[in-house]
Amino acid sequence: MPKQLPPWLFYDQAGSLLFERITELPEYYLTHIERELLAAHAGEMIAVAAGAHRLSLIELGAGSADKTRTLLAAALAHQGTVEYQPVDVSRTALEAACRRIECELPMVTANPVVADYTREWTAEDSGTGIGDRKLLLWIGSSIGNFEPAAAIALLRRINRTMRAKDGLLLGVDLTPRDGGKRTEDLVAAYDDSAGVTARFNRNILVRLNRELGADFNLDSFAHRAVWNVDQSRMEMHLESLAAQTVKLDALELTVEFEAGERLHTENSYKYKIDQAEALMNEAGFPVTRRWTDAEGWFAVLLGLKI
Ligand code: AVJ
Picture 1 (tube, protein in one colour):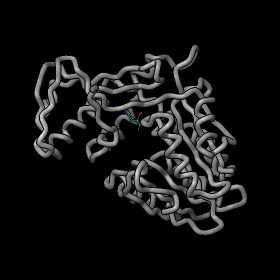
Picture 2 (tube, protein in one colour):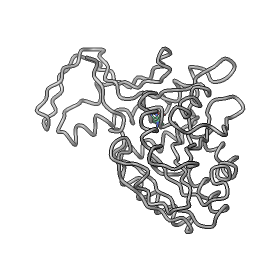
Picture 3 (cartoon, rainbow, N blue to C red):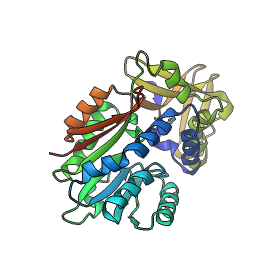
Picture 4 (spheres, protein in one colour):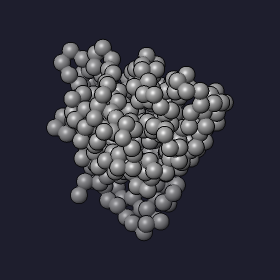
């Protein structure tokens, strides 16, 4: 059996900070392009989602919510005050995000929820008043961590707890294509020259050492980022550079690695824009608008529940 770990394990305090540094890397184009799309079109996104109603915003995997402020500012321009519910597994990231938002945008009321949205949380818990519309934000290409079928299942589950005309704003990273993004651009985004992504990847071992009393030797695992063309996904692995035995005391577990054996830590699925649209349609959020950069590297799509 290939060894693997779930990517939510990345986001302890150190991992959340490392991810923030990733978003500032020149190679990590995802954040830069999405931020530009939001800056250019936030007013339109909010107007289409709101119609003649008040909008409250819910964000899955909000993290530092840095890009979200553009949307919150647009919502404030639309309606004066906004309720905002960021959902994230990282309490420290959420607390920092809410402090910053309430300072910079005092007319936003933030109700953070520390939860794993893949399990216990649903949009019903968001406490929005009758008559308001909800806009669910799933930006940053977080959807990439899920197998397409699992992403659809998750969105359908949330969709069932929402009302007609509630919306989903989805940010998706697009597949390489001729004349646009090359495979090399994709690989560079996940294997940056400053080595931040490598540290982010290895931080999962630091965490297991600390929280499960494991004895991973960080120097004997190398960061690998590979494009899996058949599955249309970037993969991150930690490759064991030698045959070695690792103990995880808290689990009373011993794990053997062969030299060259890989521990799979993350998938980041990439979509063609039409595939992303089909996925939203299947999830119950038929797409009404889509925005993309001129070269088609990244897309933001808005769908409204029927
Ligand atoms: C937060 C899941 C969108 O897959 O691009 C960044 C995480 N991993 N660099 C992504 C990540 C390596 C990121 N997501």
